[in-house]
Figure 1 (tube, rainbow, N blue to C red):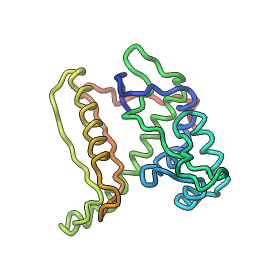
Figure 2 (cartoon, rainbow, N blue to C red; figure 1 turned 120 degrees about the horizontal axis):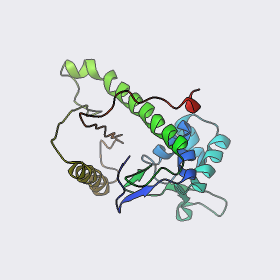
Figure 3 (tube, one colour; figure 1 turned 30 degrees about the vertical axis):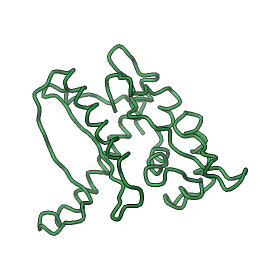
Figure 4 (cartoon, rainbow, N blue to C red; figure 1 turned 180 degrees about the vertical axis):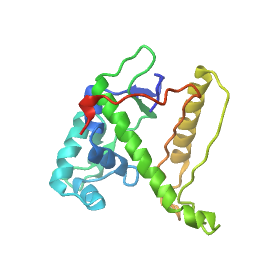
Length: 205
């Protein structure tokens, strides 16, 4: 999530925040990374969910402007094929730009943190094989870096990283042998970040 607004950052509306606060809708949106043009039945089969349930959530994502229909990939007039709206990054807030709905924005961020933790668990699952020097398939990685920067330089670095990821994605040869979808999370904090931020009780389950 980009914290600072830039020409390539789309600041999320209340509808977008509401859509992405739901974990299944985040999974549906992520599924377009593997299959850019998908029907409800395709996504239902991939995620193990009922097709009618997926159809409902697709409509919510469409109403929020996160996906659009792709009629050129439809078999006929009744066939509904969807694709994700492409943006470099989505932001919830920025300097002088408050979140459209702070409670929903907090829910989205916390949901993304949960997704990040699940990603870490996937990396950890491969750790024994990696430590034995047996992992050769490039399933995942975990690395740390440090940089001394001003806040403006840090934001410029983030935009460079996002742009590099997009350029690599666009340069990929479709159908190339060994193709995988890589989930890439970027987590960073300055050394004065407050570790004791409290939880909004309205979000407790």
